[in-house]
Length: 351
Length: 189
Image (cartoon, rainbow over all chains, first blue to last red; front, side, top):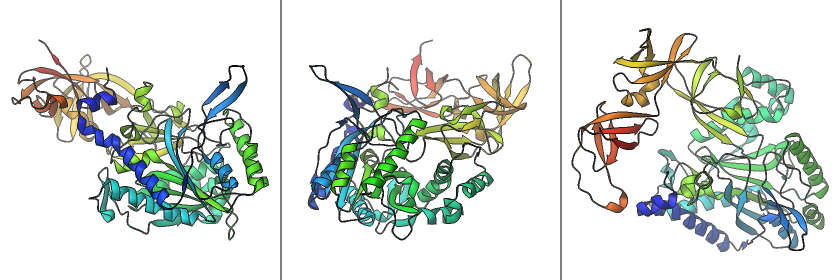
């Protein structure tokens, strides 16, 4: 019989601090945003319409009242839609730390089916200010949880990273140019990208899409290069099709204001300058719902309440979603998110 | 040519990667939320023993190497090569040491292992899940803090060190997990 985490801790109290790192990191996050006068919101985990993520699967259930009223209900994949309604209502700068859920995935090194998400939104701001927030927040987490750490030579799992400001900032187009030797015209052209991909040895057939090739190259050539740079990196300005909730770039409408932040080969957060145009948002939702159908994912409608909130007027806002479990895993210097959870899903459900 | 969906790739199988059969030593399924789900695979090159990562889309077709398995007995190591023998046909097979370096410490004389052949050439070995070995050197340890399930290192017949409970003595037979290197139990003779 395999020992459960609580039994291991009972047998060896020295393990406890590793698991209590969660409490510390969450305290730092809360203090960080409170000190910047952000409000903390608590939005529902059980909702009638979840967010539209073309590639993610949702946990579906049913809500039944004692009078036998029945409603479809879903566990959230992100608190984003609720928070945007609060932004429309005028809450101002806001953050939330909440549980999110994804079904039909493996409980893996970087992921647990039930996980903790941090989202924050800044009004009258764009994605550049969120980069500054993220950088400051992460450095603060390390300073508090590892007071002895040298930020220019910070160790995680036997490798060293330079966390000192400023972090690297590189656009997707520059990254493809630098790490995969693909210029921007080739990158954005389906036919040309598939030709280059095939030359590089990726499998290409009649069903291969531009998006598939984009990510094949991203995961095999860009991500490893970002890890090897030894610096945390913001990679920004994604091709428009890869940013369904982001605002177009004014200077170059082929791209949208989105960034992801990488450290130690891990994607830690995903940020948008938020799209506040309701008709544009509706058309992107419809495309995403169509993609869900093609992929045989659980069917559900568009959140009309969110579109109503956008129509009612949203301030210019930028926001980010950050996987808290990964921040904890980095702060605790452990190799998997399971090692930060008292009850990892693998153990809980015997996966 | 046999193929499989990249989503079904599992540790321990051989795939054709860069034109040659390579052992899958690690897999990681990820659904990053952007693009489709992916399968990160770590390969071990049978010629060099070096590791390389590759990321597939889970719905991609990958070529499975048609690897033949034979049960053979460990004979000896000679420098960079390890030799095994088929007990029925007395046929011998030699594989590079680098390929089984991690598991070499579990190869006891005459241990039966599965040797993998591709196009009639030996390309790897897979050991039984656990092996039984004799402890050749164990120091008496004082039972200290009982809460922490105390362990001590002992040396076994192949020369490697294993962490075992304090009651294990020189001459005991113990069972060891060949994947994790963990002590599993003591065998009573």
